Amino acid sequence: MNDQPHINSSNNSINRNPLKFLDSLDDYKHMVLFYEEPESGRMIQFRFIKNGLLKGQHCIYTIHEDMDISLIKNEMTNSGIDVEAFEKMNLLAIRQIPDPKKFREGSVFGYDSIVKGILADLKHPSIFRMVSRAIPEVKKEEQVSDELDVERSYHSTFGSFGGSLLCSYSVEEIEPRKRGKWIAELLQNHHTAIFIPKSGDGMAFNLE
Image 1: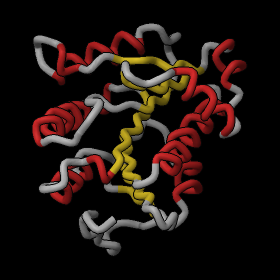
Image 2 (image 1 turned 180 degrees about the vertical axis):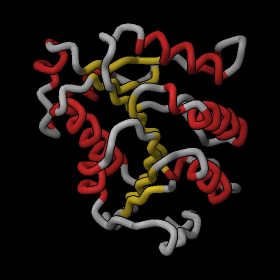
Image 3 (image 1 turned 30 degrees about the horizontal axis):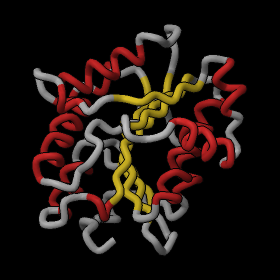
């Protein structure tokens, strides 16, 4: 990941095993994942979901409208998650969500409305985990700008979110001219970060 910003290891305890890092994480974290291969991204996402399910937590995995839910279910099943069983227990939900940019009030309002609608279906009180991202594509500057607005809004009020949120980004899809700047800003608006390059030698660390 040539565009990854410099990490000061004296201020961050870097873990070279992202999966073990995930397994040891406390709840109520706002996490960001940067990956170069879709398979690596799914591996982290599904491990995050599986850990929550095994704790009896509600887990939500959102996809955008152009994606196939059955494909995600098959990939989850192949990763070792008993999708059918956890769905019957009402612990796992895979939801298609609209593009929040379509909301007249803007992306921040739109995504907040979408998430609140999903969480309203959960039984309270309940700790939950969510894998989600607001804007379907971040290939253009205005798309990244909208996504950052949502991330800043969520991170500034994350204490009231009530669960853990994993936001995922394919590095090569991020608008290239200011990619390093965008990644740096995303790091400023999360509690923890995971990087998975094509080499497979990933790293994870706390940002607090």
